[in-house]
Amino acid sequence: MKRRDFMKAAGAVVASGSLVGLASVAESCTDVRKGPQRFNLNRIPTAGGMKLTYQPYELQLRHTFTVSSYSRKTTPGVQVRIDYEGGTGYGEASMPPYLGQSVESVCAFLSRVDLEQFHDPFQMDAILAYVDSLSPFDSAAKAAIDIALHDLVGKLMDMPWWRIWGLDASKAPSTTFTIGIDTPEVVREKTRECADRFNILKVKVGLDNDKEMIRTIREITDLPLAVDANQGWKDREKALDEIFWLKENGVVMVEQPMAVDRPDDNAWITERSPLPIFADEAIQRLADVPSVKGAYHGINIKLMKCTGMREAWKMLNYARVEGMKVMIGCMTETSCAVSAAAQLSPAVDFADLDGNLLITNDIFRGMQVVDGKITLSDLPGIGLELL
Image 1: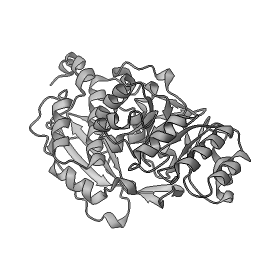
Image 2 (image 1 turned 180 degrees about the horizontal axis):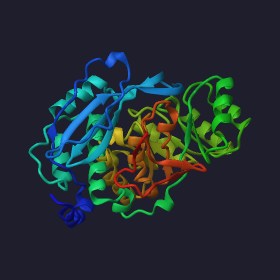
Image 3 (image 1 turned 135 degrees about the vertical axis):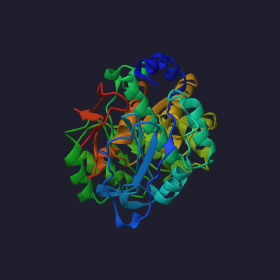
């Protein structure tokens, strides 16, 4: 298909997504235990049909990352690329522990994907519906394909996705920067490292040292704070008391106060809270939005949970129709997945897109944080450059 034909089909992209026909060429996912291997991102694309390649890539964290339920120093990931007639789209799967997915499961899913049957890159609805039908799970693997295809099609259109969706890049918000649960000494160090580069910080809470965490940060900065309990609070009355205390100490929003299997308790807190309460673990995909309405003020959309940009865009618009607030978040990711999520950021209330800033081995340059604010480029697709 010639470029003019792609542009002729552009109107269909906004309505449905878009995609490409694809002959799966899956690279082996062996030797995962050897650690991250450099993905051959600079390989010259093969002319003709679409080629899907993928390879494990372990993300190395700058600091040990601790939330209320676990700690880790690395995050497993899989890098994906789709080549088509000289063009390339990049995607990524990132699998933190709570997703219940692994490098092996992602690679197993990708090995089953056969997109050879599709011949029009602008049939994204049909193609991603097929990908989704291959398994009821595997959201991160599905997201990797979705992101790569959005990147490719945006490049074919020579437009970034924020522009395709009709958004105003200047309205992108400041992003939070996350400080994990740690000792006061480490919290002070982390806060000093980031306080002069961001306009809002995010603090992990949910253990018995929440107030110590906040007080320690307040020794260094008076920046607004968001907090994420990651389901860590157990008593709703104590949680509500803490939320009132947090508000007095400059906190502006709260994520996932209690366990997802306690919807009535979360709703009780939301009804009484002086701060907006956002669902995180309680919201995965579009079908979950009705179930959290009323129990939370808003939702945190993450591409790795919802299967990618196509569904994230639908979730954002549905939540707005329901009068809910929207946050766009991320896992620990390279600039690939973070930049994909950032394409939606001009349409949200809060953004937590710092996953690429938490690692030491990013392989892309994408969305930038300038004076604490998400800054989107005019580069087509998801706005990536290879480092």
